[in-house]
Amino acid sequence: MIRLVDGTRVCLHAVVDNFSRRILAWQVNEEFEAWTSVNLLVAAGRGLGAGARIPTLLADAGVENRNRSVDRLIEAGHLKRVLPRTEISLSNSLIEA
Image (cartoon, rainbow, N blue to C red; front, top):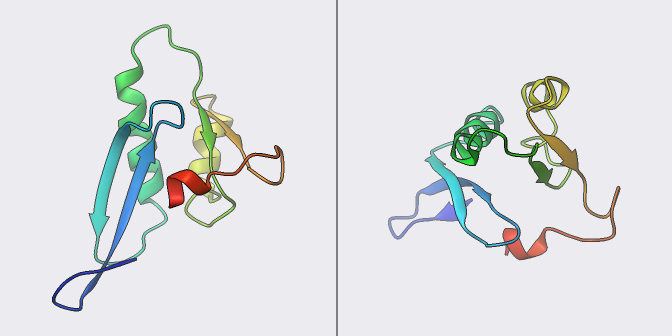
């Protein structure tokens, strides 16, 4: 959540490349919406090009990253998910900061 100058709050959702720190897709919503993750992951994947390896989603265990819609993307083979501090010793704190 980000508090704006007028006191209102918005949610900034973003997909960031962990290597280059490039923002691949983003969206601002007035409310937290778990489905936004799927839309952004699909949008970020469009830029990969044909023949690209299956991307790995490095994400925390929040509801925006672990829900039925994201699970379906993983089950369909569109991406892999790795949970920091659960499946690997790294953290995505740089991205969240």
